Length: 449
Ligand SMILES: *Cc1c(COP(=O)(O)O)cnc(C)c1O
Image (cartoon, rainbow, N blue to C red; front, side):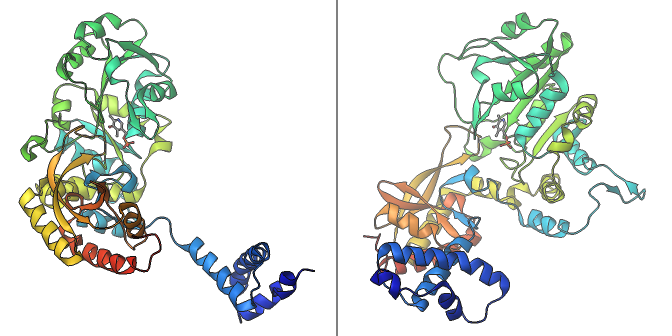
């Protein structure tokens, strides 16, 4: 037996040092103690029972640290897919809390019998979009999949080449089409597709024309595409469906905030699409969900398709979505929904907040450009302000990520910057406190400069 081995305590001795523990604690501690002992053995360092125990407990504590933690999004990307996209409004959060117990998700309280999960949102969606009916799915991708599976399985769907996009996270339109059981027929070229390209591709096996919002890129220069209205008219004339995947889908005109024009959901519906699909957590500003609105008979096909059961939203989603839609009906969306509050924030307001934060934490207020993100308004930016922090950006970023809530910034000009466009004003105080605490700790951190 080597010296180190002799100088290490036994597993039992370490567990005894832990004092009285429950069976559960003991069961978790045991493998951690074995690991710590084998580490000590490999390292050739002598250690007593208390030291091994402390090491085992530290390993457990690290493992127990939740990986799903609240974050302050200071990236300047408002709809950040990795950070949960749209933050919910106060009303939506309250609705989720209330929905956590039992509720009438599939129960008709007036009639006292089984009700319809989709009925709650359908009325609001019809009022807000001008569509006859609507359903809710788990996300936007599910709405597209369901629409294609319901309307075009084993038949052909015509899509412009320039719209065969990858949204991100592996969501590629051609793959979704294949999964729905439909066959893709590409028309036009990357940059130009005319109405006549669609018209000449329609045959006996054609079920639908699909239009897809480009979402995260822009085709500029020598380009051409058919108008939604023309595609709808062509589809109607030839007895096929027109499915329009808007992606983000907005109910508010984005031009008023100095951003480019986005076809709104009511515009897409009015243009004559049979189904318009969009996400709940992009510009709508609600929970992760997919919405499909359109003609009553078309939506009925989606609702009764076998896939619907697998793609349906849960009660918390429905509750948050209804509260979000309610803000639009009440005309308060712009003032209540975080996404629109962030988009509407003026540069003057952001500069004032950046200066205040910079003063608190000892950084510098700098002008930046923020983006909406989330597959909407590609290449569009808004003027914003950030607080740039002195120090090695990667080290600072790591420290800020360790906070609770974690703070995620962005590296600009080799400095870590906290962009305030994507932070709600009511979070400024919390942000200032966390950054101050983290910067105070910086001196002790071996990674920092
Ligand atoms: C984002 C997006 C989707 C997918 O929506 P999710 O809600 O992310 O599932 C589909 N189509 C387009 C055009 C999109 O921009």
